[in-house]
Image (tube, rainbow, N blue to C red):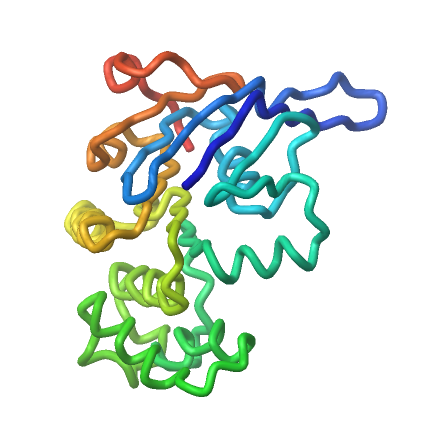
Length: 231
């Protein structure tokens, strides 16, 4: 599903030394995998997610999404692929507070001009366990419920890959455990899930853990033993 080959991304600002955010990263994530990318603040993990999510472009290297090279595609084609293949969940829920859970989930489908937007939105909320909260305003929901609405919004277009950047960072331990269980359920149903986190307990929810530091992936196997750092 995802193949990265020697990806490089460097940020440059006037009168400052360049910052290598991604340093020759090569990675393959198979269809249906659940993978965690673990690293401290400044390690490059969010930049890597942005590149995987087609929100940013690498300076060099190759990126294949579902078998197609995507790094040189025009912006409008990248937007189409994001809508077709990818769903995003962030630490901040990014919900409209005075809008119902159902209306928040409907937004991506309205932009896509889908005639079945209401039925699909209801089904997505049912899938995340919020069938009884559809008509509640977002501001009336708990943090865990708001994150579930955000996940429903991310999956309403049935993406092949779900990218989650620190998805439990604003939640207590019980709500966080529920969100991780939901990711495992989605993964068991066939969705490829990529978790981006600084928290090794969150990373441990994934069968495969990759550690990133200073923009480079470390060899697999020892990531959890030495992980740490703040987000």
